[in-house]
Image 1 (tube, rainbow, N blue to C red):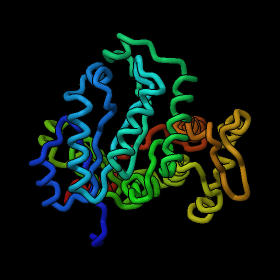
Image 2: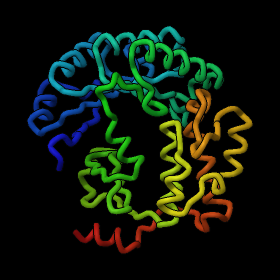
Image 3: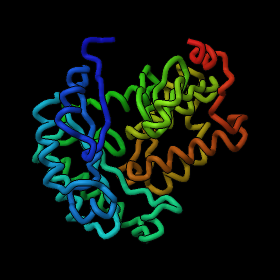
Length: 307
């Protein structure tokens, strides 16, 4: 392991204690990522989060003193949340001096308590909230690193960057993912399941799908180099995703430049959807000749299981 390797741990504000932070420091953790969601007391109660905003701020200030890098997650598009509430959350984060901020919309998954109790706001509301938050953070000196993440320049967002480049990433712990030797590692989502599961889930990626995944991963960073997948795998993104690209260009979400596909500001908001449409076009319309990314019986996966 390199001396400057990033060792990042994700936690929630509710679970963060002084003892746990001291233990993480002793174990070499140099980047702490805290799921805050919101500092707003009423919205925290609605989400079922323990503790109020003042308590969360106190914990984050202490974490800021202890860890070289501190990042947090903030949610927008919450029921009853107004645009000024999102900015108020971001103002607190900037005031604490966090190095990175991941800004996510709330997912109104079917059959969840929130989706049963509240109606999802119009998509235009989410778009306006995101654009307003983006402008605020950029005015405060934060760079838009990928679709959801903003950095003050110190947080290199290495986990996501390496993972999306299909570089070697060792993921450990409940819910962690990783990528090694063309194999995905995906651990169980709860601590109880993770402790009981000795080997985790490992599956290899069919060789023909690696350039597809690479291209879709680059969408998260706002641009896809057209020549690199051609050079590395003989794969042409313009041909593979022709229909999705055509539709996205017509909607003003993509621009085709010289040897590059670039997302517009609106395209960055829709980046996950565009990536999904690319995957669907390639995998499920005959080009990929398969319908699953998993090959759990592969030789590589079996070798990892045996170690």
